[in-house]
Image: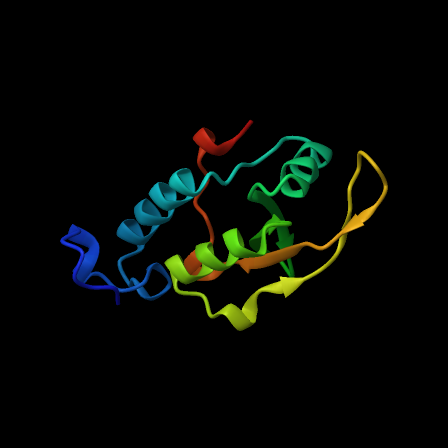
Amino acid sequence: MITGTGNPEDNLPHIVDDRDDGRRAARLRTFNRASGAREFAKRREGMIHAMDGGLWLHRHVWKGRPMVHLVSTSHERLLAYGRAVGIPDSRLQYKPLKDPRTGVRQEAWHWDLGGPVLPPDDPALRT
């Protein structure tokens, strides 16, 4: 728990540990908007956003469960996101990705977001 900033959320647990489903979803929605995360209808556009250091929310289903990969070439932005929602740094995954504009692989990382940190559907994040 983060304390001492005078923020009303000071007394709340990390988002990942918040047991109030409605409040957790609202906090995730607010945080995702503030973080600059975006969803794209076309995978290529999302990849380009991630290659430019943006945060790309890529929804998919894994073993029958909804999941989101939060992808970027910005290691620091991803670490900051994970720390803010309460995900241990050790869970950040490294996977170089090919830039669709050049065909050249770049260093990239992603978070697997599911369960309590599955970002709620938010039309405001779609481009």
